[in-house]
Length: 74
Image (tube, rainbow, N blue to C red; front, side, top):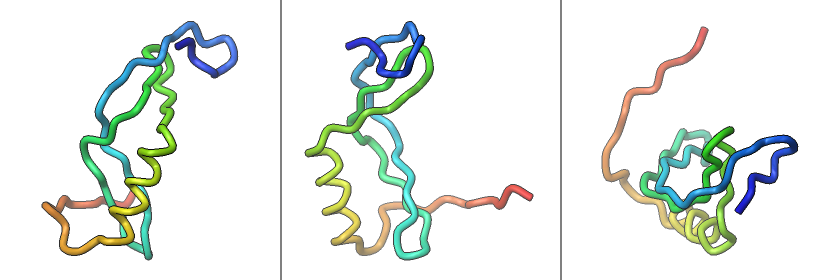
């Protein structure tokens, strides 16, 4: 599918990505999220069922599978 960003010549390609979100004041990264990503500009589209699954993961969030350092840009 052609990218929805005006004048972008790219096409959306199915990929797995890391999705980052703030949840209850914490930075959460969900790895392996299926998404449509533009080959030219990097625009990301998530299907409604993917968004619902991310929301379910956040609602049921327990201990993370792994942790990573987070640095503040100053």
